[in-house]
Image (cartoon, rainbow, N blue to C red; front, side, top):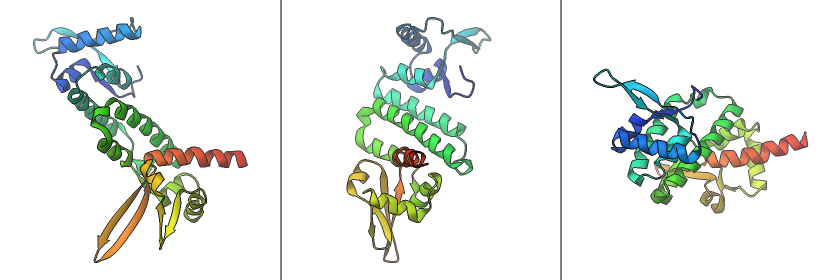
Length: 218
């Protein structure tokens, strides 16, 4: 198992879900058998009496697979803890190069899609929050994709993503509903300010479209 991966032990899963550790161990063995991972070995830990006891250490994919059969409230506790572990291990976005940021957002999107599928009963409100987390301004997105901000905005307008409203660029409603953009509206001293931001989903879609086009034109 990659030592840089986010992992969780069977004891941690038991604590988060309120299940007995021996029952979690049983669930893991059933899962491993179903996946054909017959050589997956359990580790061990010292209990309060100084005796060696077995435990499993699972990577994120196996944790998510295991908890799919659990009650939705139990799944949510584990998903939250996995996210905390990931955020603690995630480098600062400010220190990333443009391509590192794009790759990070792509991997983050895949994780969110998997988690949203798993947590489907939590539905639409949760989905909207997850897809707006980590959004970037149009200027920062342009820089990450290798464009000047003016050229990038005009390109998005020409391709039907944005339109000019006064001094600001705003997304068309279909792209808002698709989760590619969010429109932040604020008011101070009677002045309304609007800012279009690109979501992780939008960044991934736009990078796939425009980096491919740039490579083909070279």
